[in-house]
Image 1 (cartoon, rainbow, N blue to C red):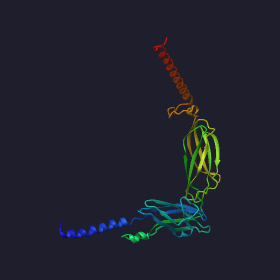
Image 2: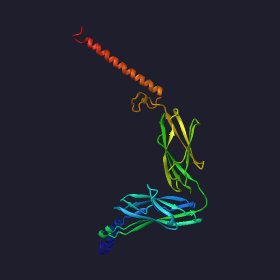
Image 3: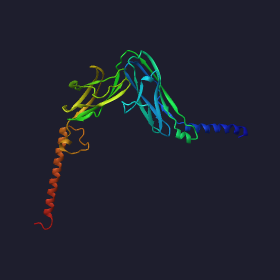
Length: 321
């Protein structure tokens, strides 16, 4: 290597080393920055969107959240587990994330049109670290674009996730079912559930479950899981069934779905009070009963044979007349 090449490489090496050290000291917070677009929003209504802030630093950080622009006066933030008390500050441990709900409460007198702004996640500078560190730690902010279009058109659109606890239950049991609503419309909803149970296309029961009391509705753009609903299977005979559900808004079905489930006859293991560890699974009740009786007879036969053999050996033993 000649001297001119060495002179060229030295400053390059210094720049690369400085860049590596600088980048290591500039860990930061991050925010999911996909723009929030809300179309056909109605004045006087409230809309919800999730805001995720990620801490990639090797220390705990304090982050202030706020809204700027045309949405600033009617935007509030709530922690995921608290829907009553608004917050403007979150503390995020190292390597973790915080999920907030941004609530946009549109004024009743808001005119039709487009309203734009940003959601800002602002990391405070840590002065105690800055005074000791060899590099400067400064405050930083990450923004997320928001655009809301206000109109007079009401849209009811939502999806439902249905999660039965099981698809196979025994007679005399209830079947708990979870429901999670995802409101993709522009009005708050309070869906009722019309639940029908069918067997061989014949309707067995028809029940309507109202939206639970004491629980706020599902806001536009938001998700909510209601308390589980118990499907009453106490009086159902064994066989295969279909649970058919219509989700009603103002008495009108808007979403329909269904799932199948099986009701099993009472297990012979419960009748006999014994455990078979799955050995009898798949057999009909009469078959299980026959197997149980046969097992009892076999055990009795073995006992009788053992007693008879003991008596025979005793008769042949020395000292017996």
